[in-house]
Image 1 (spheres, rainbow, N blue to C red):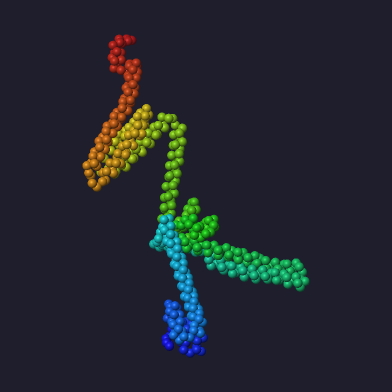
Image 2 (image 1 turned 120 degrees about the vertical axis):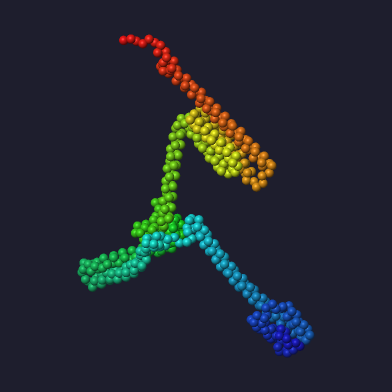
Amino acid sequence: MSNQEDRFDFSDSENHGNQGERYRKSSEDKNDNGKADGINWGDKIFSMIQEYAESMDFAELSHNIQKTIDVAREETMKQVDKARTEAAKQIDRAKEEAARQVDKAKEEAAKQIDKARGYQSSQAYVNVGHGRKVIAGKLKKNPGLYSGPAEIAVGAAGLGAFGGAGIGLGAFLGAVAFPIGAAITSAAVMIPFTIVSAFLLGRGILNSKRARRIRKYASIWTGKPYVMIEDLESRVGWDRKKILKDIHFLTDRELIIGAELDAGETCLMLTDESKQQYASAMAAKRQREQEEVKAREAEEALKAAPFEQREIHRIKKDGQEYLEQLAELKKEIVSDEMRRKVEQMETLTARIFVCASEHPESISQTDRLFKYYFPSVLKLLKVYEDVEKQPVQGENIRKTKKEIEDSLDTMNQALEKLFDEMFQNVAMDISSDIQVLEVMLKQDGLTEDGIHADQKEPMLKL
């Protein structure tokens, strides 16, 4: 019979009933030492049956097999519990790591938001003279930070002492049949001290609360060139009116070095640079507003103006926009010859617009330029700019460039002809004016023929 460590010994019948128990304890000892993990319970039961079969003693076989199965089940449950515990630990660690990642992401997002809103990553400073600089937003002092708790302590002590003493004295005098008037008078002596104590207590509470709020504000804006009231409100979570009241309390007493609240109460500026930027922004805003007012007034005046004046305004506006587009395209063109053609077009176009604005009867001749010719010219110039930038100037590209250059020559010739036709009308009007002037001069005898005719008449003799 084998006496190996993992086998049951059935040679002694009185030990048959304890074989399963001894095996269970042996298994527990091994598991505690970390040596019984991964036991093959099927092999154990098979070895047990084999030993009983060899000894032909089956009296305790079923009982011991059941105990072995129970031990195996217990070991399995221990392993399951161990796995559950380890899994729970892993889940907790994963949750903690996820929370850290979320906090890190929030912090990074806050930094990005601050950067986008113009906050400096490094601390801003304020020059206070004599070469000294202090951190922007630093408080000179925080009223109520220490005096508030002191007032609370004194007020509470006084309220308890004087108030309690007054009530106790009044009750005592009334109990000993002291005259009521005298009792009231004696108790009333304590009332002023009680009121003062209550006042100190209330003021101390308010000052302490305000000091805590101010300390929170300072932790946010210290070292920054400015802080938006909206951001301050979102970070501290307090009412905007309360925040502004606290800021006015500080700025009115000049308790924040170099701080100034903007006119709209939307931004607290903490450095000279931020104040200058704000002043520049406000000046630019006022200028824009003035320009907008002038534009609206001009628009209203134009609506009430005669049709001819509205047409002159339209032609000037359209012409200016077209000339600006031509100038932008010319900047991107490399070819000197092509740039010269564009410059010629700019000159002709500008003269046409001036002529049309001075002689409204010629405006109709410029409308076809805007509707048909100019859009095509702009498109051709953009194509020319694109093909000119190609790294390889092949035959097709050179051909395209040549065709666009020729079309620009044709357009310039057309503009010259149009300008000449517009002056033809002007010349006809001038001819008419000249004829009228000559007739008037002749009628008044101021022409050369009239003067000679007067000389042929006999002079009057006196």
